[in-house]
Image (cartoon, rainbow, N blue to C red):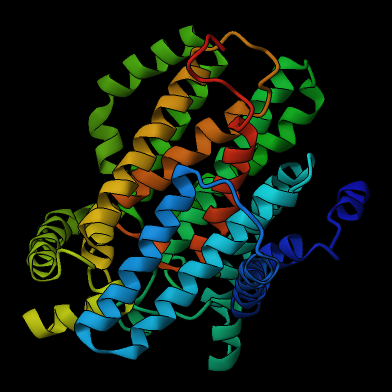
Length: 397
């Protein structure tokens, strides 16, 4: 543990910013955004040439859409979204340019321990209510959810919202499961017990958030884990799961209001589609979505509760199409590596188990609406792009 703490290199602003995203989220977000803005500024001042990839094109289209939406909707307030996109892109470029070989190793442990911290502080804050200011600083105060605090029994964690906290817990869970796979392959069985304990703790946390999407995603991640561990075990567990599907359905969090929540989601999606039709070119920006939704329905809904619908509605048609292209390219790369026999790609399981969480949690929610999660995901995605940059996917891996 002492060696791990020494390896954190807290002088590195990315490591420090990632840690602060868990401990003091507003400060962590500010630090990472400043780092991103500084990177963009340095590139412009020095007139550096950058190699434009499909990920860069995605960020560029998002930025153009936010500027276009600002002009179309005549609200300069929306330019804050442009600054946010520039921060994301700059952070991505920073990692792609100067990220070290051991950077991802540090980041994945930050995510694992950060997810444990998120669970612990969420439990503590459910028993001892923090003062409002401290709650905002630590991310433990409920934000953007209708239910009154006194009647709220879901784990808020440190991401202001259970549906955002479950994303953190799932990423941490995926990383510790990948670590277990590594330990098994290296015959390091003495460390599996505490890694399994962490997995159980984080799985408990996922259930405590009351997120149905998170619950379904967790099952999917566990099935993928067992597939990578042992195919025979995977088949056996799949058969057992199918035969006990009624039990798993009964374990769905807040299953008593499942039908009501599903109908609410469908209503939000239909209304989001109507908003997209009115702003199909540039979208509304994340800041403008709630305004347009309120104009349409009179309700306070901050986002589309679906990642794909959200991208089209908030950033326009062209950005949505580029986003689909990004997912397809990533899926192709993952499938190629998934069936690869190359034993040198030892970090693959970390990405195979974590990247699907972005899409799976985005089916019934939009966790990346949160800049806190968006920044951490940019770090994860940049690590994946660095990892696969040297691989020729049109040749046999």
